[in-house]
Image (tube, rainbow, N blue to C red; front, side, top):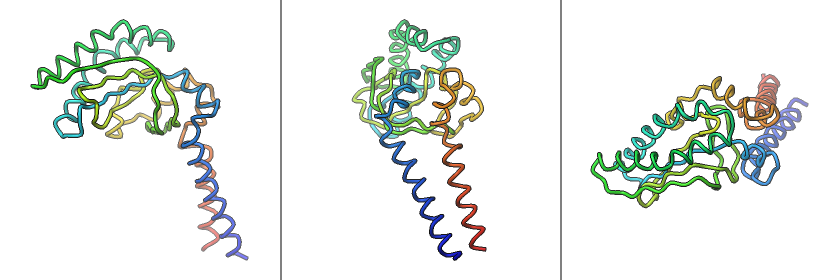
Length: 210
């Protein structure tokens, strides 16, 4: 009897994992994903190539842009206001990027634009944004063939480097709560809901095995 229960609970765990994965991968067609994407502006920096030097340069450009833009975006109260700030500062952002590139001995071109872009699944601390179309401010360095760096400009979450895992879970949730409905936030919070159910089932399986 115990073996049957363990087997059944194992099937349930697999189902939940598969269901969550399916939602994240194919969630781009859902109205929920579209609602979320309409309330967010992402930041995307593409390096010239994947060489160590070009990747290092990308991070230097990113750091200077964030240092310049975050105080301005931090005062924004809406996505429209953030969009306006980005458009007004576009030329200065490009100039800052070009100066950093030149100071480091490179002659790469810099292209910037604000528009819709397809994103894969991305995790930011305890927040996982499903794949789909999002509005993004994009900086392309040179050929733009290298690995990218990303964060969220509205709400302003670029205060940490996601690639280093230095993400404040509490601060991320607080900022997201200001722009997303409770059910929308719950759907992208990877530390709650179905994950809690999954871990609860695993816990029960372990109890039965003892």
